[in-house]
Image (cartoon, rainbow, N blue to C red; front, side, top):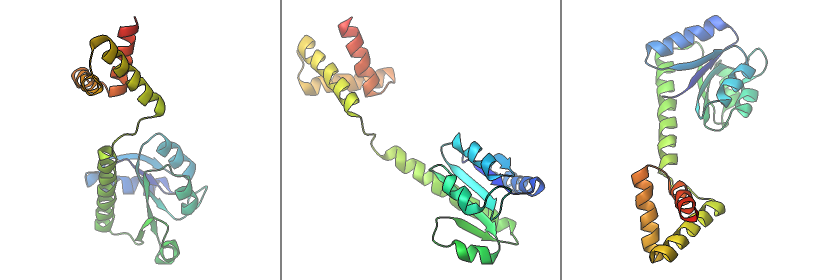
Length: 182
């Protein structure tokens, strides 16, 4: 599910956009009238789409864009004149008057983009901190000393325990250290 926040100066307009999106199968996380409300809602989320007009009650669209957390895409609904000034700053634009089909297709495109980014991030190997590497190293040392394993066997043992218990390798190393030092 992709988080969608609609931010328009008039609450009735924002609810209207929300209703169109909901009827098209999207889940709208929030409806706001100010940029500050949108930022507050977005701060609690990992990623999503902000749909807004160029001028809000408390700020302009570009100020809102600068304040959004990483992972949020912006869909600006504005006149063609405003859109012409907007090129080159990673904001997707729709010109007014708005066509429902254009809105739905654009939100679909942004949702797909966010899902691809999530998949790509999950596929990247997680890097461990020096502390985590040291913890795993200590657990391997104890296993090598007490159980007469070589480093590869100790590592495989930690991996197997990790998979069997449903914990990550660092947590498994921590458990081994706790049990062996008890």
